[in-house]
Image 1 (cartoon, rainbow, N blue to C red):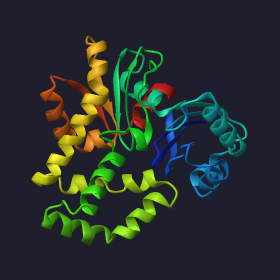
Image 2: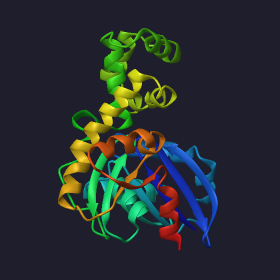
Image 3: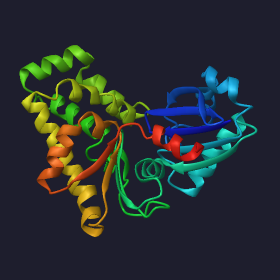
Image 4: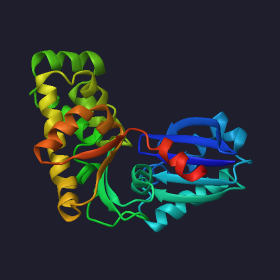
Length: 280
């Protein structure tokens, strides 16, 4: 058996295969080693029947994870996984590598990530080329779902929302100022909390106010991440991977067009393409 896993900070997608066919699958909480400690990872794994039942039969795992950006983080995550999947050879790479493989396979291209986090890199056909992006949800991630969560909460707390949107927000989340600030500053995994507000954008994307927030976020994403790569590697196709880009594709393509950026493909769930690549 071979397992292929793609994990953002919010959700990890698991596919278990045998002889090229998917025989089991599940989703877990994202296993970002920057935010989730080894003990918690093992607790998460033990709650999934599909993983428990197949743990001893899986011989190889390809694991692509947000937060696995350094050798130490990769080693730490691989060691934790090995204590659960005792007979597996485990390969851990970061989620950008997985996104690049899903979008480009073995061909060069520019790959942008636009999900719970944001990133962009040139992929030379073998690995993403290092750059200064990927600053995380506090210093970066412009255009991501946690970025949009920050913008929405800031608008709500600053009393800048139109009345109809404020009413919808209050009815949807039933949160007040003390609760929001407590959750952001005094509770763990504030990034996941911020990401949880993204659905409000998709459900209200036709509203002019929300549409302006979306376009503003995508403008920052294009200017911060995509334009530098497009100017440096202007002969390469551009691909976007992640839920935010996929679910707001029309707005993303429209904003990109304002910068003369043409997006070749937008992939919501890279796990499917990774399966094709690693089990064939």
